[in-house]
Amino acid sequence: MTAAGTPPDPDLAIELRGISKSFGPVRANKDIALRVRRGTIHGIIGENGAGKSTLMSILYGFYKADAGEIMIGGKRTEIPDSQAAIDAGIGMVFQHFKLVENFTVLENVVLGAEEGRLLRPSLAKARKLLRQLADDYEMDVDPEAVIEDLGVGQQQRVEILKALYREADILILDEPTGVLTPAEADHLFRILRGLRDEGKTIILITHKLREVMEITDTVSVMRRGEMTATVQTADTSPEELAELMVGRKVLLRVDKAPARPGKAVLEVKNLRVTDVQGVERLKGIDLRIHAGEILGVAGVAGNGQSELLEVLGGYANGTGTIRLNDQTIDLTGTASDARTRRARGIAHVPEDRQREGLIMDYRAWENVGFGYHHDARFNSGIFMDNAALRADCAAKMERFDVRPPDPNLAAKNFSGGNQQKIVLAREIERNPDLLLIGQPTRGVDIGAIEFIHEQIVALRDQGKAILLVSVELDEIMALSDRIAVMFDGRIIGERLPSETDQGELGLLMAGMTGEAAA
Image 1 (cartoon, rainbow, N blue to C red):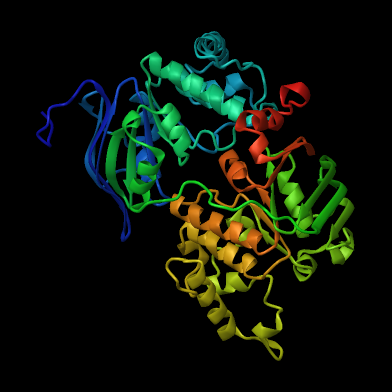
Image 2 (cartoon, helix red, strand yellow):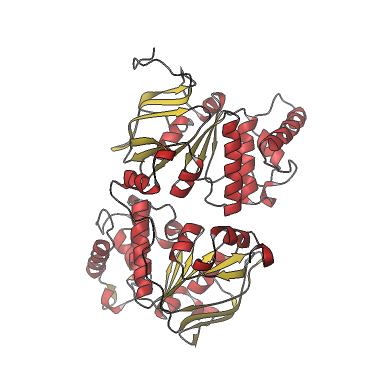
């Protein structure tokens, strides 16, 4: 019997009892109970700040719970650090991989698990075991390959192999498909099903309800630090899970009328960008966006989408021709900067709100004014009118439902979804002719996603041109009126959402053209 008076269940791989954790006045986990059966794939979903990551960090030994107990295989287990978690048979694959990029696959797998003082015997043993594991679970990776030469899908397999090499029976994956093509995600799911069928236990943290429905056996929902429900996946639906996450009904589809494109607002011809290392990142981009339409750009991260946004937004230089409303934009010298772009009617919601969209230590009203603080209505003589900036911020916060609606609060004190709303409010309310928007809902709560999508569609319906970049194919398919796919710095295909599917787009994203993707 345990201290809680309940006998242990040996059929449970994990049982968490009364787990609580606070950070100062914030209670991240509140008396959490979780039961995960052996040989299952168990999903954990919830909004940002729901406590998912804190709970898994406690299970993996990154944090120590203030109260509660952890049962592994029916036995009470103390996990003071990650090595204790590994010793208990727990492995974790993080959203951002923990690999040494200039080491080989083999060296990464062995790193931290060497046997004895000599490395050679460890490498020899690992090489043999690695090949066996790769064959058993369809994870073909060259042990001698250097990590930096591998694609993200293969790097993820290395992380899984690392955990299996350490004899993990329980595998935690945090947002595992965020950087994968659909084909790579499908392959990952085959791997996970194979691991489950071999008796491994998988915990999957994800915000993608479609993936939860496809891959999990059971799903637990967290909200505001509490576990609100655990259900069998076969007995639920995306709509029910969304409501459990948010506490209200959520529209999961994008409700929009057909586009009514007008004149061409943006025309790009032969656009090329070379980075500081001399590597050509954009290799002759041609595209056109009309008033009243959304052009979605799909692609695996790192194929030139970021550089496209940067050069159009005035953050980077390039060569070629860009015309906005039939007027050529200078791509050289000071005339190519972001301020000039804004004055010409281009607004930009960058991909990384915290690095490029906000100054995290500055207050909300200061962030809302950035880029537009030169406007006459925010200036009084030689000084900025801070009262006018604060009032403008308060009005925007009300219209965009930013919580809490406090202009004096520092950006870092808002949740990710509310940080994104601050950036969107600043850019959309400038009434731009062209909105550049990158990863509009990355790391954003499902309720905020619904709101952000509504704002993007509303801007389109006002006759504005929108260039949308997203790694989320669901988002691209739902929002776009036309879809361009980028691979290796080029646009290799364009499709109408009504005439394509995620399978075809996935092939294009992987660089497969011609009959294979036609």
